[in-house]
Length: 258
Length: 264
Ligand SMILES: Nc1ncnc2c1ncn2[C@@H]1O[C@H](COP(=O)(O)OP(=O)(O)OP(=O)(O)O)[C@@H](O)[C@H]1O
Ligand SMILES: [Mg+2]
Image (cartoon, rainbow over all chains, first blue to last red; front, side, top):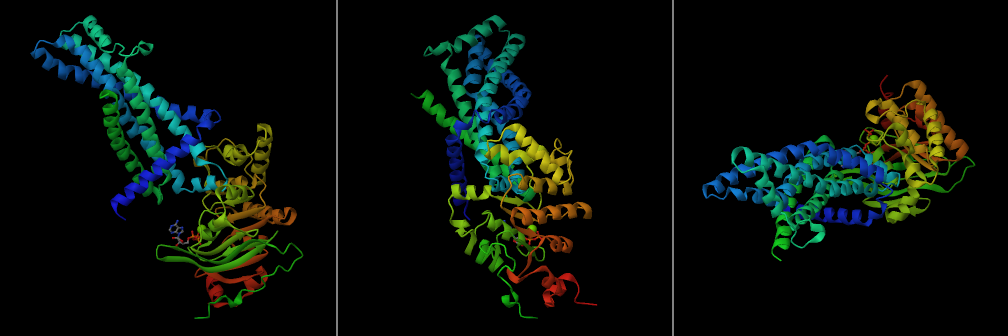
């Protein structure tokens, strides 16, 4: 079978899975316990990773751009640069990448194991809807947790940038935080939250859906024992990151070139 | 080599007074995976309230046969009929309705790994019935006692032995009180004492509740204990379908080779 046919089949299955999930959104309340469990295991348990990576990312951005800005005497602007790059781009993308590698792979491995050990067949035989029982809770919880973790990532990244600015770039904490907050001032005035934050959160909401849908579909389609589970996990993480990057570009284009 | 056609398939009509209508019917079913043909024009039927045992070498397609009955696989050609309805032609709603009346015991148990034993057994009722929790708990406990694992409720599938998984799988298949039950090696991994108890259950369900069943099993004691008829799968077809007494007395060379009674 050609690679293109395979790709199209995979894409078709993912779109089908997304639609099947959307059609079952009415069961969210009924599935609240499973959703809460997934929020904890797929989201909350990743908090420390997101905090750690976000902190260092903010510090790196601050250091790298700070050195250049200092050369032209503009280091006062460091708060603005860190805040905008974290909120628009770094926060959503870093969080999505971390979730693809951790939660995405665990979804694919879990569902893949269920598939190869006949558990999915058992659900089918008992007339139990696997979309309601397995897919819906995972998609909903990542769609919620991805933006929440992104807010954390943004915040800690900006804080990390400030640490570097005040200790290594001689930009006072006061000045840094003023420029950072200033940069995020509302553009359209909704709830006085800035557009950059909205756009970042919209992105991460979509990233959460992409990661969960791709990982679920790879897991559900796994065949052939442990080998199949390994392959499903690998393609779940690989495709999640690829789709996230493509979606990232397209959403940025739509939001910032209006 | 002896002729291996279906000439020896004898006595298709049920000899007892139970219903004559075929509940499960295979009509010339063929199934291949790639270039490996597993079922070849397989035909047989099971009438209401009877228990058919299917024997055959490992890899001969016994599990594949069961999967066709419950619609997990579709035949390449031929038809599988349940109460006259063709399984492969049913809509997803119709098949879901049919499956609620059926029970399936998987060869490897197929317990949901993230639910404990009690919740596994309760799952079909929780998902597909409006019974109150207390009623569900009572029924689950009753079934766990029936398969001799009364204290297993809070254990996770990964923590229990293969034989226990098998029994939990049986309890889960029985919890909805199905009218048609398919058992894939119900005695595998069980000690003789527990196996006898399980066979007793299978027997009683057929006799008292008129359950129609198919039992795939290698163990001769099991077949003697539960079966009304035995079918031997050979090269994808039914080599013989007859009552257990004539089956075990058969002089067919393939059967004698299978049981190791061909050489003194
Ligand atoms: N999903 C599948 N894809 C490809 N081949 C399959 C599939 N399921 C079964 N087979 C093949 O069909 C043949 C029959 O398999 P089946 O599981 O029915 O054997 P069995 O008679 O139940 O054997 P056992 O007694 O060992 O359980 C095997 O050779 C197997 O490789
Ligand atoms: Mg088998």
